[in-house]
Structures are given as structure tokens and as C-alpha cells.
Image 1 (cartoon, helix red, strand yellow):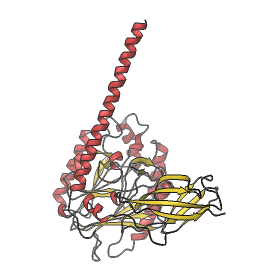
Image 2 (cartoon, helix red, strand yellow; image 1 turned 45 degrees about the vertical axis):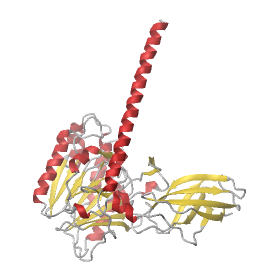
Image 3 (cartoon, one colour; image 1 turned 90 degrees about the vertical axis):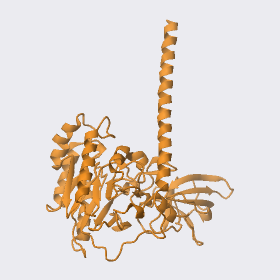
Image 4 (cartoon, one colour; image 1 turned 135 degrees about the horizontal axis):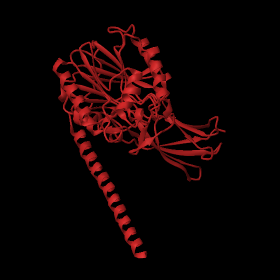
Length: 457
């Protein structure tokens, strides 16, 4: 009996060892692929003296509004629709919104009641003459045992949509891909991917120099910020090499105004942020939800003309402002792509603190300490992504040493960075020294700055 148990345990041990070795091997392969792909991305394209600006005579012939990842925040979606109409109903030289596109994850676990509610919101706010293109995300079928039945009987029936569609507006092709799921919620079937590929090829026959707009929920892997974790390499296989494709995706919840949220290699990829909550990374570790992350309410305004020019702007509902602006002069000319990693990194730089930078610490209504300081200068269109902050007391003892994500996604325009610390970290009336080092999107670091502040009584 003891001998048999030993044999069983030995076999179990071998199985565990094989399993762990397999997992480690897969992770190692993924790391190598990521490094190789990153190297390829960084080497593509040329470096230009300036990033592009929108010409004064740019006149669009189509305007789209794209949003994603609302997760039950339908009031924000309604606000986005109403705001877009208000912005563009009388805009000159080109008025109106030609279509709304939602990239999915309307719910969290696929509740039918949520879809009924959101469909009602769309009927109430989207005008009958404006196409509403709806794509589902992975959260849409968390409770679905049979994908086809779920779509036909629930999602598709409620929204009146097909899984995949091509909408022609003003001579532009809008290709919406929900796809059929494969073995997991993260994969697509070969037949649905073939549909996507064929739809792009057909659109290219009639594009006549215009951009082709494509939409799906997950990012193409290894393109925009967040895509190495929240991306799908199957999408790359479809889109790679189609130069005039401008692709829009969600899924990651990573902010649109991070300059890495637009990427050009062999086509243009755009990460559209989120309407419900933000997620970011910290030192490469994803799944971070920093302060005010749940304030997310941003959407894309996409404009294009018949000659291949495309303008993409991010709009923030909280501040009612456009907060980023990307312009592509000609999507047909891959050699002139400005938003390559190589070119974007070349125009980034180390943040620079001003000579009068100051810091304060006050208690909030919960008794926690709010430590704030003047943000450093960065180039236009760039951000401080995070800060390394060490606080020492009067005796030189370190009371806090943290790497904190900057709230650049929260558009307030006050020029201040602020972070919350526990009530027991500081003591009222005492003086502290804070050493700060800022890091940009492309990992340029500022010179450390040392500030002194007294915790307010």
C-alpha cells in the first residue's frame, strides 16, 4: 500500500513538474516574441522634425464617433451621443455625425436586462437617420453556453445587428467585426477571421484613396498601449499590410490620451480608451486602478477626407474638452507614417520640473493626506506617466517610498499632481522632504527634485 502511494505521488509530482515546465516555457516564448516584436516596432519608420498638425483647410467628408467599454455606464454613453450632436450639428465647414460606433463590453457578465436597457438608451438618444454600429465584447457572453444561440436570440435580437457588417457612408467602408468565438472568449474562429479579411480586401477595391475604417473589441496585439496583455494576435494576421486601414479597438481600458494609444506600423491602430473605468500599468504590471480611475468618460471623434487624410480626437465628457489630437496626412503612404514607435519616442523626452516647483499636504474629509505638487513640463501631446516619490520626516526616516501612476487621464487643467496617503503617514505641523522623479510615456526620466513641505494643521 505504501509502495503504491509512493508511485502515485511520484507520478503526480512528475505531472506537476511537466505542467510547470510547460507554463514556464510558454511564458518564455511569449517574452521572446514580445521582445522581438517590440524591436521590430521600434525600428520601423523615419524620424521627422515635427509631429503633424491639422491643416487649416482640412475639410472632412465623413465624421464618426467611437466609444467603448461602458460596463453599465449608459448615462455616460447618452451624454456622449448628445454631446456629439451638440458639437457638430452646426459645425463648419462640415456638419453632423455620420455614424456612432460602440466597440462592446456594455455589460459585465452578459445580463439580458443590461442589453435591453442600453438598447433603450440608444433608441432615445441616437437619431433615426444616424447609423448606430454595435459590436460585442468578451463580457457580452460571460453567461452564454452557446455563442450562436446567444447572439441570435439575445444580443443580435435586442440590438437588431449582425455579428459582422459592412456599412458604406459617403464612399467610406466601415467594417465591424464581432466574430465567432473559438475555444475561448479570447479567440476567433478561422471562418470569421476569413470574413474579416475578405471584407477588407473588398473595401480596398473601391476605396479610391480613402481610409478604410475597421472596428473590433480587442486590440491588435503588440500595437497600442495595453495591447500586449489585452490584445489578440489573430487580429494582426488580418490587418497587417493593409496600409489604408485605420483600426479602432477597446478592451484594455487604457487611456486614449497616452501617446502610445495610436500606433502605425503597416496600418493605423487606435486604442479608444473607455467609458466606465481606466486601467493602466505600473512598471509594466497591468491591472492597475489608480486614483480617480472610475471617472472614465472619453470617446473618439474620427474625421476623414477623400484624399486619405484622417483626424482622430479624444473628447473628455468630465471636462467637456478635446484632450488629444492626431492627424494623418495620407493613410496610403506607409513611408510617411508619423505615429510609429520610433518617431513618437524621438519626440518624447525627460519631464522637466520648473525652478519654482512647490508641494503641499492637506487633510481631506476622510482624514487622509492629499500631497500635491506642480507637474513638470512635457512636450505637447505627451504625458508624465508615473512618479517615483520618497518622503522623509525631519529625522531623515523614510515614511513612504512609492511608484505612483500620474492621473494624466483625469483632465482638470490645474497643473498639479496629487496623491492620497494614509492618515498615519504624516503628522500635522511637521516638515517633510519629498524626492520626486517623473517618468514619461516612453520611459524618459526627469532629474530628481527635492521639495520641502509642512503638513497642514
